Length: 406
Image 1: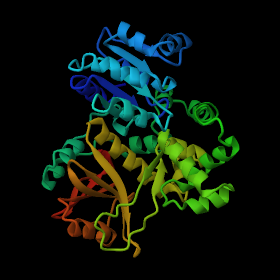
Image 2: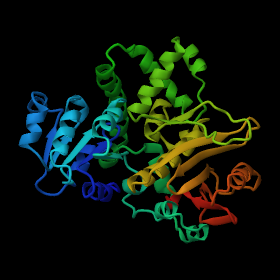
Image 3: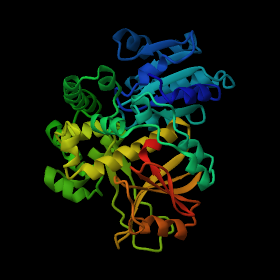
Image 4: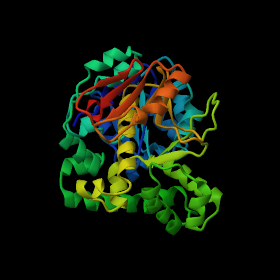
């Protein structure tokens, strides 16, 4: 199945000596390596023989293999990063020499940035987007955002997916293997074993002193915390641990790409702003598994339905921008008076507020918060993502776009 990140991988290899692909386990990093040109050698550090070859003497290995080497699961050998720096600096002008992948390590990006700053480009790979899971053509919305096109250009967008495809993707989630097997029984078993392996192999290996029972309970709690503003002291009280321990748990979950931490947007704020962070489980399939929701009827009747929808839409939007190499930060916005915006994107394309509504019809009263934000901060436009049948212009600076257009 075609990945939207393939073009970005080839573009970055033409510009940088090394490309790092990071992301959650089983999101398709190893499979993406198969898209490398013929002649590349792939080393898998989860294989004992490959691990032994590199860990004995990383510098010597890279001298013997100076180019077209892809190293999978590189977090297993921290000594590899300074060795890569030395190998790259020996022939700094040559691009496209190394690809490394890594997952399940909160310190991975820090290690890469400290050792390989200026020498490496990073791709944050996610599981399937809606377009990838349903084998649909890529959307035109992302170039419009990145290139800062005028708002009227968005009126040409057309939904590329049906409500049935969207519902199936929302319920099942985005991990590739359950989509490829296409079996409800396999999906449940896969989720069960994935979470067990994540805790008992990845987390215990990276953090051998962690309390396994407490962290397992924390993961279960994330199902009800997803999409909400987080109060660390409340979570600590329920878990029976200290507040610093809870902060560390959230740091681990975010660093292993299971949870997405979203800070509040409080820049140049004239109003009283809620300053607690927000967050959500990045895969709707894991969320629904933790909440024991295995079909659309059960999901649509559940109190977490709205948060689940919002999180799934945000993750698809961020995936699409990441796959095109856009540089941006994301926030949420909420004032003490209750005005709220689900997502604030700030990047090379400017400041773009995004409101997410599950319904087909949206009233102007529902849009008061985002309209005020657009005018107060002089944004070029705001976006409302909903389930309408077509794109609609609410006013000169605010446009409604169906989720199917993503």
